[in-house]
Length: 100
Image (cartoon, rainbow, N blue to C red):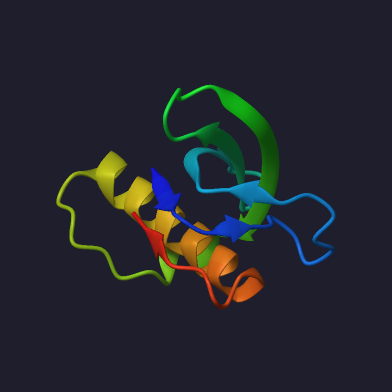
């Protein structure tokens, strides 16, 4: 889960803003295309109710390029996915602080 206490946007258009959301990453991998599609479940940190969802897509090379500290396969994959999503969010919201 990725959290922030800032008001953020999920894309560069900035049409919708979210105040202090928790973001749960739900990845899926297409072995035929090499694409990791990550559903971002945007949730209220207090109630944990989903308020929106959004999708980011990454190539498998982009995910494989992340250095991880986990030992188990699933945890390695999730850590890499969350790290890439965090980097994407930081690029769109340079003044916000995100925590995994």
